[in-house]
Amino acid sequence: MPVRLTGFFVLVAGGSWAYLFYQAWQMSHLPMSQMRMPPTAFDAWSAGDLAWIFGMWAVMMVAMMLPSALPMFAAFTRYGRSSNADTALTLWLAAGYFAVWLLFCVPLTALQWLLHSLSWLSPMMENRQPYLAAGMLVLAGSYQFTAFKNICLSHCRTPFGFLLQHWQPGGMGALRTGFSHGLHCLGCCWLQMLLMFAAGVMNLVAMLMLTALITLEKTAPVPATRLSAGIGVLLLGLAGYIAVNA
Image (cartoon, rainbow, N blue to C red):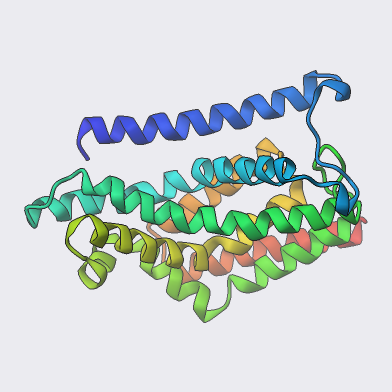
């Protein structure tokens, strides 16, 4: 990618992670009276609370998914050059891609609203239910073995192949191409994102580990089905460990 474009994506990713680290720092250093925390009662949530949680998830989606999306953005830029397309169209592609993940933040926000109302998440957004964690790990681990997961993963691992099938010219075409790629990426990773509820929504270690796992899954020079199955075994093993020690 051109240096300016690379720098822009690095700046976006760095800014997103900086925000998440700052939020985590606040939660560990400020007194509870100075922190904004989600209400516990279902009907106590305001539009501002929902917007705040949505914004938090939106920043998390950008921070966690941008590293694994960069190979597609780079491939699109190179493919566009061969088609005499403006490399700035890569930004339209990225907009379409992240539009999918921003839409996914709506059910994530609703689920967090529900879990806080049930007191399954603490005011610090930590998981209080070990069996919730185990259950989510079982779902995520089992999903790794499904055909749908592996079809979506194969599209994510072959950006040039994806572009040969889905390339559309112009700004709106790039937006639609990015949206289509985002849907495949969502199909690949949505249950992995739900694991943040199991680990604690603002658990930075879990964020970093999941980001590394997702990026590895999409870029490692290992057969996709074998890698997906290995991750599935790991998640199921972790679920069993949590269930036994709950």
